[in-house]
Length: 129
Image 1 (cartoon, rainbow, N blue to C red):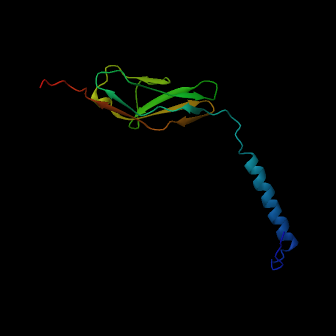
Image 2: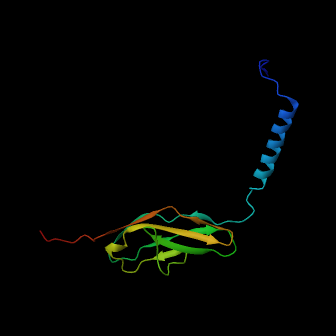
């Protein structure tokens, strides 16, 4: 190992101050270690395409905390009554298209899913020749 001889020497009180700062920083960083079992999303909802009039759904799977709570949002706005791991659509209309997320929370924290997009499309119609 090569050590440069051109490094300036620090006075003893400067070295002690630096070592004290390092010790304090290490103590504070150790205190930042996770102490809870915060929710973690293990299966994200996925983007999908569905026909108008069908029953698409989103699902999420999460772990952590003692009791998990779910809140689904469409385009950033909470969906009334959508508080389970699944978000079901019955006879979905074109207006169901949008960006969906779910926030999973517990007494130990919360996490929000990736955005899942729902594309609603009209079914093809048969046209006689």
